[in-house]
Length: 231
Image (cartoon, rainbow, N blue to C red):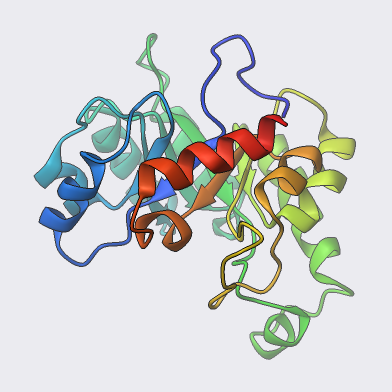
């Protein structure tokens, strides 16, 4: 783990992928802000509030630069911790997103760039017209663009984290979905690792959804994952 050591943030981000905001609110009462951060969409955030948790607002902005700039400016007023956009939106879109935060001096949200979904493999990339030699090659190129155009970090699978950390260094946030404790199913994720493996590969924050949210004892599951990471 490379980022925010001094702040001692938990490395866990729980994905609250509930269709009903009331379910998400009920779940959030079973865990502690000291254990994790939460990843949610805008509707859930507005309806539920922060509840003491740091919020990763995962809207994956992808539009013309002016529209993204206005969206990021508006989102900043929600006092969130981190937000996401697609790196493939290009140079001008990324720089416009960053410029939207220039007026703010304190508690500025982190901007994280999405590389490739962890459900995708090289065949899927080729099908959508991306003829990279490998998933790692394409993710690495996107991560370098994110760094060049002022983003704070990237979302990538844990399998790319080690290479990105080596190329870009410490002051760059790596958020990794595709995290599955050893005893859980992979579901629709393909490029996966255990929490402990991902942290040791260079990830800063791990996005974990169903293994925690569908657990009968989410607090204890979260506690066990944190214990495994620190062992």
